[in-house]
Image 1 (cartoon, one colour):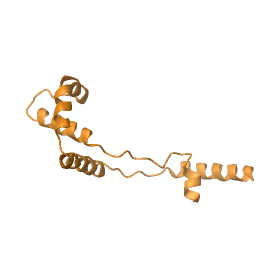
Image 2 (cartoon, rainbow, N blue to C red; image 1 turned 120 degrees about the vertical axis):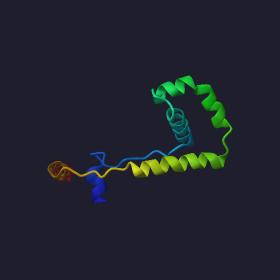
Image 3 (tube, rainbow, N blue to C red; image 1 turned 135 degrees about the horizontal axis):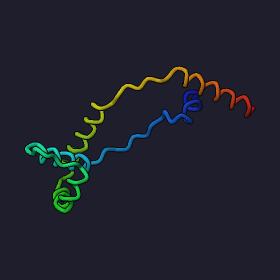
Image 4 (cartoon, rainbow, N blue to C red; image 1 turned 30 degrees about the horizontal axis):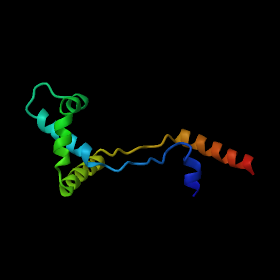
Length: 106
């Protein structure tokens, strides 16, 4: 409880969005096209140029195929997680400020 009270103001608690199949599908298609090219597509250009075909192909996917894309996105998220270390002086300062604020409320 104390941890939540002290650190909610610092935004240490991050809310993750659920991965979706569309992102995995587009990423897979972009990677497939970029494999053989010398000049590679950027994501925004790729979506602009292939918007209709992407929508059409995505609408034909089954639920099982969409779940595969979601699982791929989850795996990439887990692989890309980084260790974050707190700045001890900043934590101490925030903790003291939080306790001071609590003392003023009482």
